[in-house]
Image 1 (cartoon, rainbow, N blue to C red):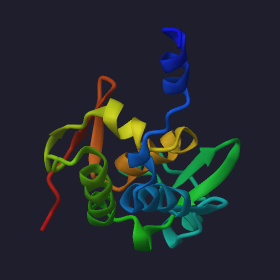
Image 2 (spheres, rainbow, N blue to C red):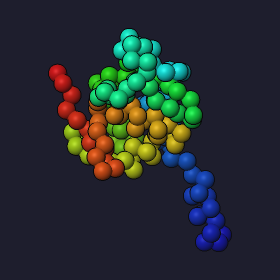
Image 3 (cartoon, helix red, strand yellow):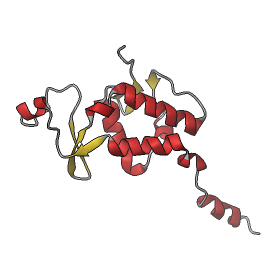
Image 4 (tube, one colour):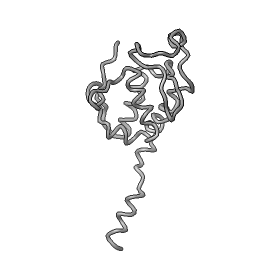
Length: 142
């Protein structure tokens, strides 16, 4: 057996943690967190979709198509609950409730195609804020 054979096998090794239920549930949650088309809430309808004054956006564009956040299931507490379960399952460690998010780890267990939805949801839900390319978890209001 040559030295290259084990390395080649490693290239095709799949991280089994990615198939854990909380991780797959989190990715499914990100897929369903947005509906098709722009937001049609009263505020967006009244403002003809103009969101300039909004602290948290309602309408986003993914893959060139407008999508709206599903408010009933994407409050900061909902996002945090799903994220904590996936984080614990994947890392075997608790997610810190406040402070800097380890983006490398977060991106590792989130499907690549869902990264834009992930970051849109973190900000739109109010769970986290971006500052100089870093994401910080914020305190949730009781």
